[in-house]
Image 1 (tube, one colour):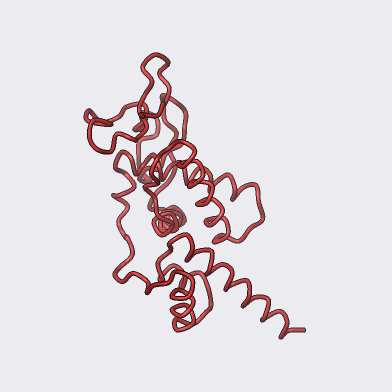
Image 2 (cartoon, one colour):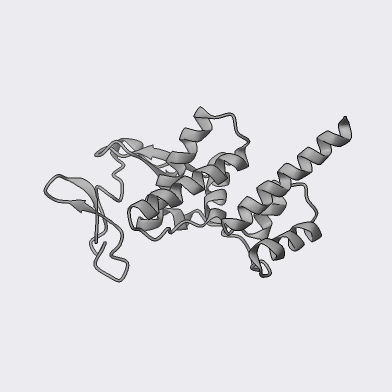
Length: 189
């Protein structure tokens, strides 16, 4: 019976690894989230992705999540993640996978190019779990956005309510903008 359990566990880990590879996760994420050997993961990655995994370090700075557009995308993902975390009994990595898929669906439905990779989404959750980042409520729209842990919450205004002066003026005009007639977030087309 114990042998069957280890087979099921290994099969489940392979399923998770495949799902992460299909979403574009880096090999370091797979190593961290499964008990599969490096060699096995490398073979699996090449089989599923049809290429060798990217090399180099994972993103390690919280600063990327604080810039205007990445913050909006990261906040969307983290709100989905937090909802799933509270409402489901999934393992943490399965919540990340499901939340990331929902984030991709939302970005596509709005005609936006996703800015958040699954590796950055996974790293974001780790930053929150380690107390390096948190969610802070915007004092204007009441939405919850990714911020540094010691952000002054009482006066925090998000990037949707107070976009930077040049927001939406360049090549990346596919970002969210404010609909001035209603004061609500709207899409730039």
